[in-house]
Length: 99
Length: 475
Image 1 (cartoon, chains in turn cyan, green):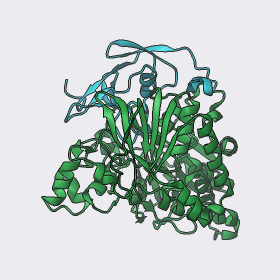
Image 2 (cartoon, each protein chain N blue to C red; image 1 turned 60 degrees about the vertical axis):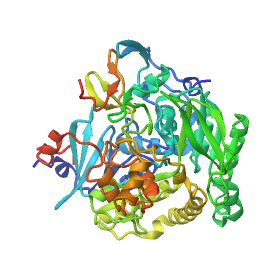
Image 3 (spheres, rainbow over the protein chains, first blue to last red; image 1 turned 180 degrees about the vertical axis):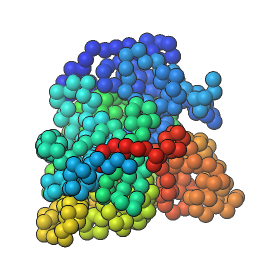
């Protein structure tokens, strides 16, 4: 059983996004965080001070741990931003403005 | 300034912020009693966190598999549709409110729209009702910043809203009743739940509490969860706590240990449990930013309200978890009372408390119940002793336990604000929302909510133009 089977979900056709150039499949309605979790990825940012990996923590837009660069816009909360076909997602280092 | 709304309708206008159980009930109740309502909410679908809905595009035909009290949700959803069709209620989803401004002629609700939350929107109203809910409190421990460690509520939100799970094997830990639906929800969704680790002793609650016997529905709910845990073969450890999360790039295991009667870890009781997910939470905190921005009185960590759910700022009501954590049923009762009171007062009538006598009785009983629950599900008294000098406490600014202790012992900081100024703990992206209780506990200071002027990050351009919009978004 997985959550899609449990809720008898019938999502529209999957589409492709990229994570650091690598193709990742996403379902319509999925947030960046959901698609990355489904692809087995749990971290997509390193911290400004210590360079430590981070991913989803609060899941509701409060904590800012899941910041990511989407279509060249840094500091997007992966748990809030819904994906569209062709989106390019990049892991983010530090403030997201370092180059 | 254009104010088209008043020309089309003379009915008073109430803005309700938040479409969870409290906000929805308040909005429907007020709309049914002669008030025009605009329901402003950040999510794409109404429901709040409790009734968080999967994205429509995911086509879930059986979303109730992840929910409780689904009939109540259906009733609220049908009510919302009905009032929208009748033209007495407007629902504005995906509106992230960052400030409610008090004006001479009422209130302005400022929100951000769009995927990047940069497009401004403004709603003018005669009165506002804050149903902003709460968020989870998580106390720090070594390893809690590792990917794979998520808040219990966060795991549930991701599951309900996006049908995603973080891994294959989870430990659910911390304290409080939320851990039960999280553990059973993850298990139902195919995650192996290796252990449910509760630091309190819920048995003590059953033995002690008179408030419990007044809540047969809650007893039935607890029994249902117990049965589900058994069915999914989830091992439950009470009076235990997670002392460390292990891993390098991501979570690989946790060490849990038993607690003694004083809430200290019993030496030698540690055991390691392999897992790729730790869902952890230590209770909830009311969301009070908008109320604080309006100057509403805060009691402890919650918005102060009177018997009618009015704050001490005229024209501002509050209901649900913002006024104190108490679950969905209490939120429904408070929302009902707030909606009746607001409708009466906005239409120039004196509210009659007999109109909401049933809801008031439910409110009183549930508040007693949750006060008793709060005592039992307090985090272990000595949790801060597990925070090492190199344990990160403020996640955003990466401020360690050692730095906070040095600010207190070496530099003389005696309150949260001074600790923050000396260490930057709470100055990062989340503005202390995640670390406030942790910093207070490690520093030995009272846990007082910081006053945050804005409820969300706002682009400078939007701030600069605020108040200049010539077409307020519907009044």
